[in-house]
Image 1 (cartoon, rainbow, N blue to C red):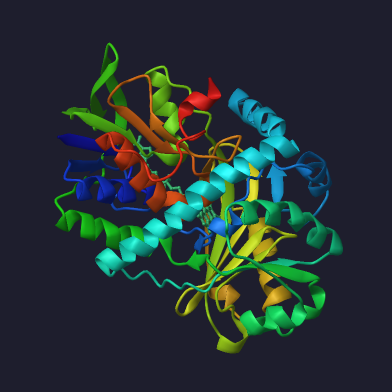
Image 2: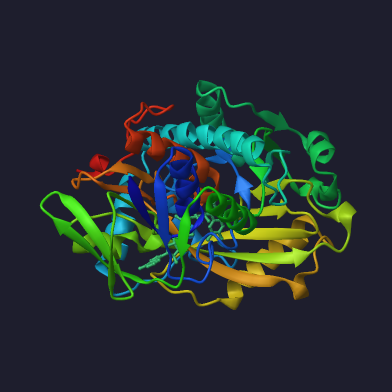
Length: 417
Ligand SMILES: Cc1cc2nc3c(=O)[nH]c(=O)nc-3n(C[C@H](O)[C@H](O)[C@H](O)COP(=O)(O)OP(=O)(O)OC[C@H]3O[C@@H](n4cnc5c(N)ncnc54)[C@H](O)[C@@H]3O)c2cc1C
C-alpha cells in the first residue's frame, strides 16, 4: 500500500518513520530542499509533556490587554486584513474558560506523555542522537501569584500521574546551578523531571536518514499546489505541475495546512502563532542551563544543547509573515541576561523566527476526514516537537486499523463540527 505524506517537518518525518515501520511504502513531498527547514528548524528544544499547557487559559484575555503596554510582553497582536485572524482570536477567547482549559490541557497531557514514551522507545530502536538530554524542565516563577496559579496545573498533573516537584530557591540551585546570580529574583519553581530536551532540526534530519534506510522516499523542492479528489476519496496531489497518486494521503503541512485543505472543502482552523529564537554558543559552562528553564513571566524557554543554548518564545498573532523583529531579539536577550548573565555569547547568536501551527483550543488535529483515504496530522502549535512521535505512532495505528494506545477522544477534526 502506497502512502504520500505532505510536508517534511518534524511531524511529517516522524509520520513517515512510523508508517514505514508498519510496512507501508511511503513518499514524502516537501517544498524545501531538506527536512525541518520551516517551523521545526529553530524551536526551543523542549520535549515538555509536563508543561503541555493550552495558550488559551483563564485570565489570558485580561493579561493580553496588559501585555499590549509592556516592552517585553510574551504576546503581541498585529491586526491584518485577514478575517481568519479575528476568527482565530475569537475562538481562542472562547477556550479561555476554566472548564475548556481543563479539557484542552488533559488532551495535551495525554498525547504529550504518550509522545515522550514513544520518543524514548524510538531512541532505543534507532540509537538516534540529537544533542538530547533527559533532565527535566524547571518552570521558574517570579511571583507568589504564579506559585498559587500552578495549583490548577498540579491537579491535572496528578490526574495523569505526571511526576512533579515544587522547588524553593535552594531546590532550584540543586537542579540548575547556573541560576546562582538570579535565583533571588525567583519565588520558586515547578520542576517536571520527566521532560526532555533536544535539537528538533538535528532529530528530524537524522530520523529522515533512518527512514530512508527503511525505504521511505523524500522528494524535496516539490511545491504541492493541489489535492485531487473523486467522490469521497483523494486520488492524487499535484506538485510542481505533476500529479502523483497513492492509496492513502497524510497532511503534515503544519501552519500551511488550511490553504490546500480549503481547496477540497476541509476547514482546518489552524493559524500562525509567530515565535522567535536565538541560538548562542556557550561562553561559561557554570553560567549556562543544565536542561530547560522556562520563565513563566515572559514565557521564554532557555534550553541547553551540547555547546549552545537556545532561547525561544514570544507569540505574535500577525499573520503569515516571517520578518525578524529586532524588538523580539531584545526581549530574548533581556531574559537571558536577567537569568544567566554571561551564559551565552549573544552577539554571535543566530536569530530565527517560525510560525507555530496553532489551533484555537491548542490541541492538534490528528485523524481521518470526510475523505476515506485522507488523514490530517497538523496543528501542534507550541508542542509539535513534544508531540511528534506520539502523533505519528497514534495516526499510524489508526491508518493500519489498529486500536491506538491512547484514547482518541477530542483529537480529530470532528471536534470542530
Ligand atoms: C519559537 C518557537 C519555539 C518552539 N518551541 C517548542 C518547544 O520547545 N517544544 C515543542 O514541542 N514545540 C515547540 N515549538 C513548536 C514546534 O516547533 C512546531 O509545533 C513544529 O515544528 C510543527 O511541526 P510541523 O511538522 O507540523 O510543521 P513544519 O515544521 O512547518 O512542517 C511543515 C512542512 O510542510 C511544508 N509545506 C508547507 N506547504 C507546502 C506545500 N504547499 N508544498 C510542499 N511543502 C509544503 C513546509 O515547508 C514544512 O517543511 C516552537 C515553535 C516556535 C516557533
